[in-house]
Amino acid sequence: MYSAKVMEHFQNPRNVGEIEDADGVGEIGNPVCGDIMKLYIKVKDGRIIEAKFKTFGCGAAIATSSMVTELVKGKTLEEAKKISRNTVAEALDGLPPIKMHCSNLAADALQKAIEDYKNKRNAKDQK
Amino acid sequence: MRKIYLDHAATTPVRSEVLETMLPYFNEKFGNASSIHGFGRDAKVALEEAREKVAKILDASSSEIFFTGGGTESDNLAIKGTALANRKKGKHVITSKIEHHAILESCKFLEKEGLEVSYLPVDSKGLVDPEDLKKAIRGDTILVSIMYVNNEVGIIQPIEELCKIAKDRGIYFHTDAVQAMGKIAVDVQKLNVDMLAMSGHKIYGPKGVGAIYIRKGVRIIPLSHGGQHERSRRAGTENVPAIIGFAKALELVNKELESQNKHQKNLTKAFYKRLIESIPHMILHGDLNRRIPNTLNLSFKGVEGESVILSLDTKGVAVASGSACTSGTLEPSHVLSAMGIDPAIAQGAIRFSFGRDNTMQDVEYVAGILPEIVQRLRSISPLYAKKE
Image 1: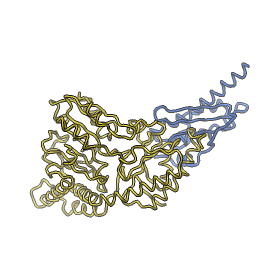
Image 2 (image 1 turned 30 degrees about the horizontal axis):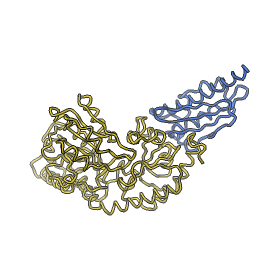
Image 3 (image 1 turned 90 degrees about the vertical axis):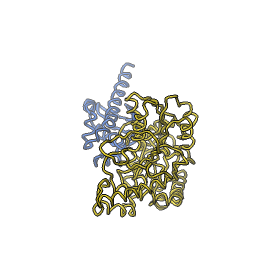
Image 4 (image 1 turned 60 degrees about the vertical axis):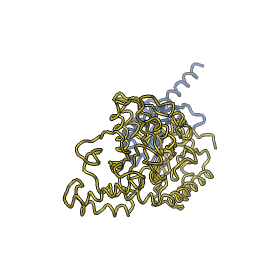
């Protein structure tokens, strides 16, 4: 039911972990199925230079988390904002229809992390 | 790669003795059991022998055994067939929250038809409290249906006691015994149930066949119409090879009940002991003692179920999960929810169900690889960050 790429990312997830001095953190949970994902980003000169994640969820949730951290690395914030659930699913050679919510989770966590980064920066600017 | 099957609660392989018994009835003795010529008579004789065999094992009369297309159909017939036949008597049905969907969805259907259904709770160990049943009974209750053994956690319900409560008040009692057959001795007289559903493929028989015991005198209407088959309870040409396979499987599993119980209990106990020693923060679901010998339902804190299944699958091990992600509904297990299990823990529930072909080597192998799998998934999980 999963593509080879999903299984590959599930078995060897990239960028697992936390970033202690992260510039942005996005945490998102799916209240229906209980999945939880935490995504950390490090930003320098408007680019995401590092991304890490921790995920409690199914194979697709872990694979999409892993894929998102790969996709955002080196991207400008503007480019990263365009990453959607479809971008992630396509990069994994597709997901079973019922699992599309899982990839939603990863992309949403990324958008939250970017938002968090911007809020933090705005707060800093105001000081 | 080594392959280990620990999902016998989902289905079992057809035993070679069963398959052998079935084979002639596909071609050599292919007759329609309703035909009066020799071909038909051969099939009819075999069909009635199978019925007799099943009846004897259950301590029923052969006229009370009806073959169906499986456990789900048997449950549908029991619930809808009796509720709709007895509408004039009342419109209230009682079941439990942890039933198989064959029962729950049949009850939902009845609700749409204007009947009322009460869903009894269970305690944290997965048991229905007979006092709750007493309280739920109304003047217009016509049917009580409680499963014998739960398919997810393997807990055995006090059916005799529950049944007595219903029968003392003149209410029909049905039990879904799909997971009980082959694990506990089932005697319909001792239980005193009015109906009892069985399935072939859970007892090393073929898929697509089951049976229902319907006590003489129970008012029930058929769900399929079109012939006099199965004493007009189930229209459609009998699946003779499958029925013969079912009866043979039941006979064998019943004969080996004691030895297999011992064998499978040993495996389950050894497996559980090994895991307790090697995996911290493991949770067993359901009462430890009131369970069938082959099934364990475990959660590993901080880990989701499907990811465990996938990890074990890549190593050739087949297990099942109560995780939302594997049920196709995105809802966590209704059984574990009813037991009051925290959703994040229920999400991680894994069902291990051993079978007659499993060995102590299988136990060693799976217990050997599981700690590493759990540890790896915990290292990815945000819910298990600072516990080690």
